[in-house]
Length: 132
Image (cartoon, rainbow, N blue to C red):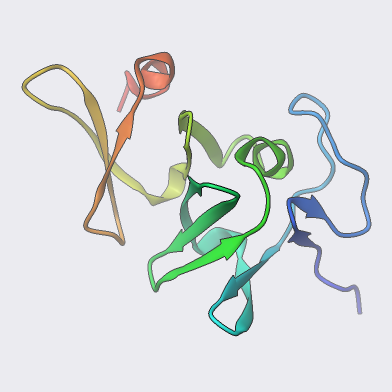
């Protein structure tokens, strides 16, 4: 039986770091801290990643946990067809997005399927959601 690959401190266990254009196989789980517990979070359960100082907050429909890695490190190792950077401090799972909505000032926000909060999309990344 093959062991599941995990993201550990922003790296896929057993593989070399990859660039965005030539990636290693995507991780199946993320190893993240939640209090005194280390959780194995299936990658498909992640709604989004949010940068917070030296850590990245991993947000799922069921809760949150911390990973000691940078967003850049995570982005390089996540499947490009599923995860996109939407702001300098956030990466979203495209499968978790319910809708992209513009507010009265023209700013784009993402509504999520399993979470109540909305995520702001910076103008730099807004083109990704023009068809939504």
